[in-house]
Each structure stands twice: as structure tokens, then as C-alpha cells.
Image 1 (cartoon, rainbow, N blue to C red):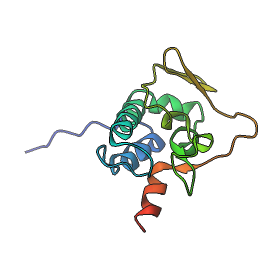
Image 2 (image 1 turned 90 degrees about the horizontal axis):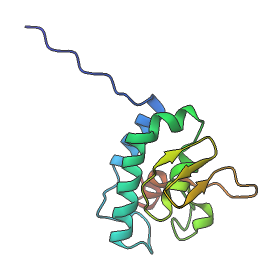
Image 3 (image 1 turned 180 degrees about the vertical axis):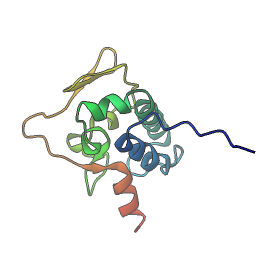
Length: 131
């Protein structure tokens, strides 16, 4: 008996890595202090939806994990000046371009001169858990 072939993942490898890393984070357990469970659930939902909907395009446009999902290496989401575009506000993206992500009436930009770069939220969570 021949088994049907599994469909290949529609995401490029880098976006598939983001999906896998983000899936380890629990939507009901904030990985950072000072973030409410409700706020984290919204951020988690917005980020997982972004990866599925715009992950391939983000990779094609050269977005990196820290630009999208970065947080401060010591203070997590508390330092929003270090946060990636998707980590602030928990809003769902409606469009992506080479230098910005649209959230409807708001826009998040990348490559802002002088802006620090954080680490991906999943690296922060692993460090916090001692992994």
C-alpha cells in the first residue's frame, strides 16, 4: 500500500523555524515579567497569525527574527525600544513591505536609525528558564 505524500510546508525554512520556535511558547503563560496573561495571549496570537500569513513574504523581504520578534535580552517586553515590530501591542498585521508592517491605522517600522536590536522572544524564554 502506498502512502500519500505529505504536502511540503508552504513556509520557507527560516519562517518555518520561527513557527516552530514560537509554538514552544505557551499562549497562556507570558515569558516576560510585567506582561499580563491577556496582553501576552494577544501578542502570541498576532505573532502566530503573522508567521502563517506573512512569514514567507517577511523572509523574502529580508526581515529577521529580532526585527519581528525581538525583546530586550535582560528586561524582555518591558523595554519596548528593543522590541521587534510584532512584539508591541498584540495587533494583527494586515500588510507587510520591505521597511514596515501595517496594523491598519498603525505602522511598525524596521531599520530605525539608532534603534537597538533585541533577541528573539523564544531565546529570552529559554534563557529565563535556564535552557
